[in-house]
Image (cartoon, rainbow, N blue to C red; front, side, top):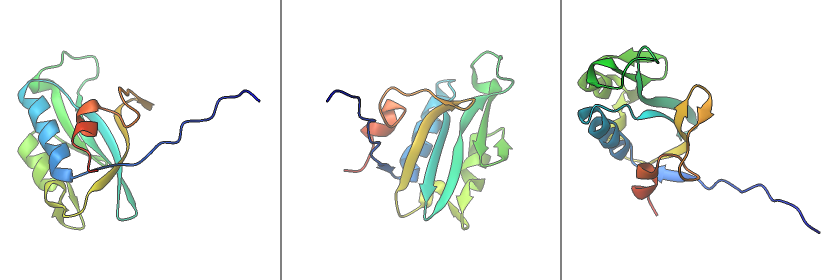
Length: 125
């Protein structure tokens, strides 16, 4: 009679260029975006920015960018080399499906069911 249903997570679809714009904007403000796990054409991907080392102060010179296992020190290099099938994330013509966002360690730091609220604001209807 009484019980709790597990909330079904709906997909969040967003264009790759919008995610890159958020990551760049945070970097320009001296903040790390943290990480986004997403799916695109059957593949699973991880990208974002983080503080290196993890206990360092959050400011531009301590921010690194991640795409899969690759780590980049400069945003422009990250944007140029973060590619799927030779196409930059920012130039993908189809949206990506965000699975988790705001990942620190293995935990998802969420403010909405989809993660970081700025992603939800740019989601496709």
